[in-house]
Image (cartoon, rainbow, N blue to C red; front, side, top):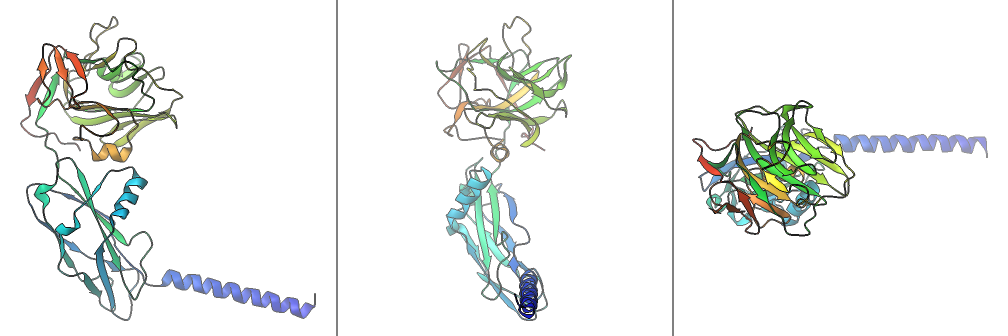
Length: 376
């Protein structure tokens, strides 16, 4: 190749690279509009209306005014969010949203848009325990939006107040699942309060097969959560007596991943190669203690509420989102004892909240709490 032509090609290539770099740099420095906070959690108590100051901002200042506009995003955005994070948020009714203006301005030399007041009404109609989301989109005709931050999610929930719970000392519930029941993936979860820890404290499960308990002294400290069966593991962080916790054990059979969660956060995990288990095997499925078990009945001394068994592995977000209650008709919910006095106890039988299962019991006393359960 001619030497001069080669030099021209080199110089041209460098020029093109420089132009590309300059274009990339200019795009990075280009002002963009976005929401500084992407997620807002709004607790709905007794008010029917709440207001919120809505504002967006620029990534860099501009020498001219920037006009922005706000719209309620399409429900498909909620579907995408739920699919991505394993949640089950319901779209908040857009007809119950009023904005003082759908437009705002960011003055020249400023970063933040003038506030727009957003009013949310009809809050008294929201169902306790259900979670709702309102996605709000920002855009501008003069500047682009910053990727991933053009939608703000307003999460609304009406907290469930639990004031009645089941007392456990030497009390229990024994379950006989329908013949042929086999859990591949599963979830155990409950709200628990322990007065004091014995050497082995039964939450629920099938002893020797798949049980969720606290401690197994002397080998396992008496105040840590343990998943025990054909394979065992436990948390390193300990529970404290006299405090409410939401605890859960999950197993996803396809991946082999299992986890122990406390208040919606993962405290421990392991890998299992289990195909699943029959909850009716061995001495059967028990809650609170293992009656007539020859190596000790292992009672839990305390209180429990919202005891649930699922035939699916619940996600971390699902656990966090539904600690205080779920719809008894929820898909995959195999067993549900609210233990708030709503379950009928007659002649040593207690029917669960799904209406499908009846457990045998030596009698669960219901205690009324002076203050509702709180999870920290």
